[in-house]
Length: 291
Image (tube, rainbow, N blue to C red; front, side, top):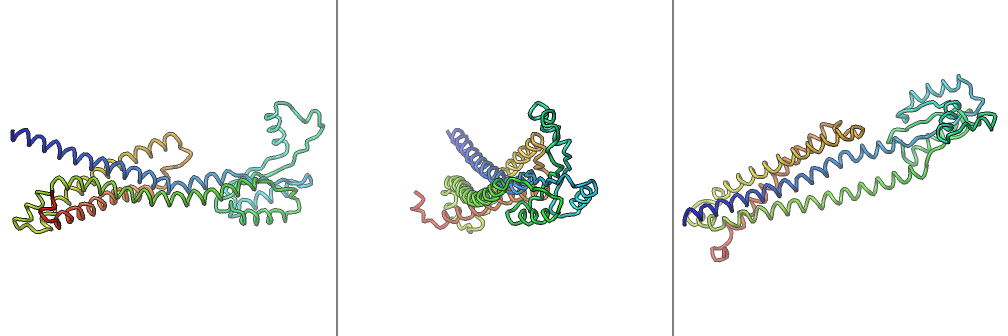
């Protein structure tokens, strides 16, 4: 009979440990995913911004010297991430490929203009900055027109601000839920040992002596859960890097390392604090209140 009871107690103990590790793992994994998304959200937003092209058209009077001078200028300015010169002959060929027929045959001449497609650095894809750049480029007497999607620029900047605000709100909300979930799992685990705690207290054991094994055990469980979460996050990072290499998810290894370190530290900190206050609660209870 005693053997069956011991087996039951052992199974219950293992089940309790498993639930704590699982809750720590799931919560920290979700927080880690959110952390990785936050550090990469600016990169993704900047990448999208830098794909918006500003096209500068030149008058037909602009000769090769003027074109080369503009090319040299673009190599020295701070706002240009990349640029490419598109001659009117090349533009005509691209239009022909798109529409499927040579429009020059019935027009008799090429109405297109030489142009530069400029991709700005993300920091300059703002209403004020891009307006100043446009004003500067229009001072060139050989520039006939400058075209870019103003509505898209405004839409991107407005949406990025909204998304950033919601990310901060969701991060705070998930952090609170994480602490509550892990705290609840640990409290349930310690609740099953409340009689042992009180018995040790009644025979003269100090609070710190009673608390130590519970805190140590919980920290170990937290470290296991955090370790599993880190392994899962590394797996996700490797998958994303392999499947979507253009995103450059693994480029900023320092920030990724800080996020993983933060996940591990958070696992240890939350389990330590939760166990400390949970054991303190049962240590302060009267014997009658245990029932």
